[in-house]
Length: 446
Image (cartoon, rainbow, N blue to C red; front, top):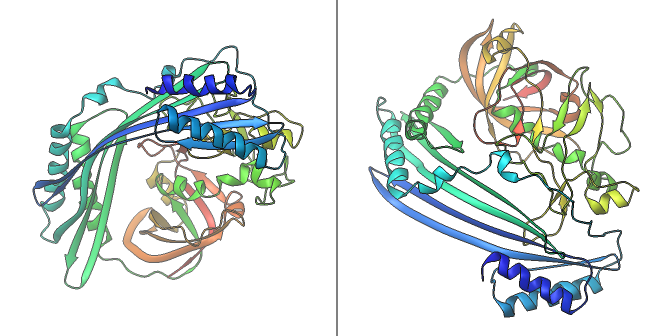
């Protein structure tokens, strides 16, 4: 069956069994990727995934079930399983909200570019092969390109109510990536680069090869530095990666489970004066943009921090009803899962400092250009302990690269230790619009 026909079939079952609170999520995604190796195309992969998730609410009890086969028998089994699961659950305060009278057309969010759908294997292959060529040219130390490829993908997310109303959000993107290894005697350094957009530019896609090479080259000559509490600049790529680990603290659901250090702190000063953090679901082209959340609630911009003070928690229907509130439109749900709280696009306003000017503010600082995993970062406590690479900077000049370093601190202290903010966001598709940050007092150790 086509997705809409499958949804209609499940809704007919709901009417037949006189279920009054039912909604559906249908997801479908397609991807095409090409991988190059030693001047030839090593692999071409084309994948399609789809599934339908059913939520049945009976007297406050929620049952979830799903199927990846959109045919009558599997749909009937999934519907029966959702009904049965609802009867087995403990009562909650969940209700399926009424469908909004009017929902804006999601095409206005700039999430889908029809031109990308014409990208074919040849287009992607040319970019991947050129990226590999650039990564291996111009430096005899470049021995191996461990990964290089180009890809495109699209997705369709469909929310359907028992009334038959539906909302369909389509997205697509294209990109390329490259990772190159340089060897000089016993020393090895790797550099990686990714390009991800909602338009296709063959030259920029292929350029990930040269940029990955440049990153690897910049790491040779790395020297140790004295540890201690140092000024640290997180560039526009690393700042959003690090801060995003801790955005779950703004979930009301997490606070209700005592899994957020922001519990009971609404209105308190949690960041420097003047700092704002906004969850913006309507930002054009952003990966998290949407007009309707996954429970059928209209979304709206929601300030999380205003002038340094904690302004709002994020709610879905269940977490909101526990506190006698309305959902803020932050329900997220994939076809195979239950409803949880998520954010859309987190935005911190840019400042006036270029990255070079930012690193020139302190006499000496560590510029972080790459994070190495997040095993030491704890979203509950806010603790930060993460390996980094970058450059030691004095008087605004990059003196030498550094690696094998760890920065440590706490997220909730970091928000109060931001000294200056960069003037741009990283250019790839993202849902975390955080500029480069100069932070005082992180602990640096080798």
